[in-house]
Amino acid sequence: MVVRGRPWRFDLTANAPNRLMVEGLGLDSEWKASLKITGPVDNFAMVGTADLLRGDYTFAGRQFSLERGRIRFVGNQPVNPILDIEAEANLTGLNATINVTGTGNQPEIAFTSIPALPQDELLSRVLFGASIADLSAPEAVQLAAAVASLNSGGGLDPINQLRKAVGLDRLRILPSDTDTGTGTSIAAGKYITRRVYVELITDGKGYSATQLEFQITRWLSILSTISTLGRQSANVRVSKDY
Image (cartoon, rainbow, N blue to C red; front, side):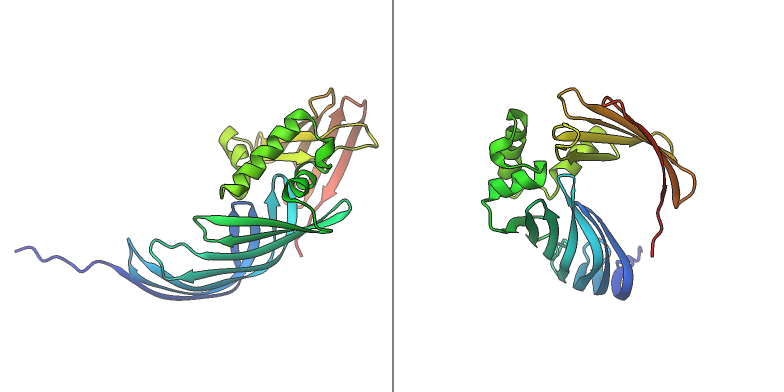
């Protein structure tokens, strides 16, 4: 006679006052949480909340400061939390706000700004740092794709998704610079080793730059940059978490 054992089940209560790190989908943040996890190990339920302590949200290569965040777990299976996240950034001439609602499996993104702007104009400022009337043809195509992605409930961070697809460690869009005459640029970077990072920057109009970073310790790095503007620089960067 074969005696079948009862399946393993969860019956856990977790309270984290801080240091609950949430990363991915553009988020790099710290949260606190109070959760209860119950049910079989292959189909468990989670009930509780996670509240934002601090962090940033990256959209299309631009960093927004997280101002409010709550993730609610309501016991559905599979786990699919309800999102309520707000992030802000000060751009040239306006303050932009991203609101992320919906669920983890199907987030919904809305943009607002002060002063108020149409969505396509606001996205143009966020993506390229310029008005929609000043975009080049390739930039206009990218803007249309971003608007279509948001309207169809697309991913939170299309630039981050592209970065992962091509195997890069960093991929960002840099605004144009009137002082140097460079246009909107793409920066693509890769860690060659654990301590050496190389980034290439180009605006597709003749400007390019190469940046090399060598990490001496966790808080001390040496940066070297060479560009087609004839500029070369070497800097020491000190970073410390407080």
